[in-house]
Length: 108
Image (cartoon, rainbow, N blue to C red; front, side, top):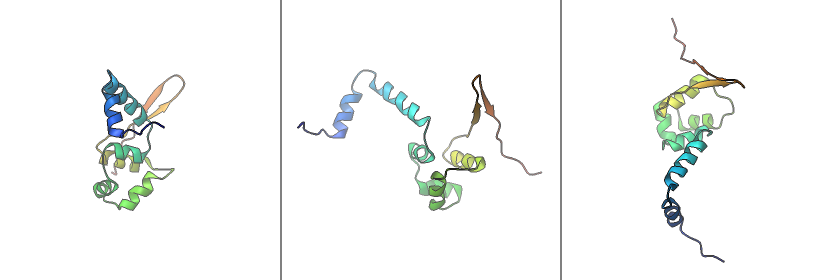
């Protein structure tokens, strides 16, 4: 039975190969293109507690939101903006993709 290698040693060996860093970065970007809210938050290195503080809600509310199957766009926008991003929504059709303008409503 082969002897187990320490992960850091194995990672360093793989990353030392020519072009490995570029390939790994491309795979990471591809995976992050289709992530859930939990993975998005973790990729930004933000804890639930820190995000909850930025949103003025409880950590439990962040957890509940991240595990929800149905979210409001306004809540999703606030979540993404608290992570430092901007929410963009598009509709994809067979022949084209249309970016939708989902600006917050203003009360007159």
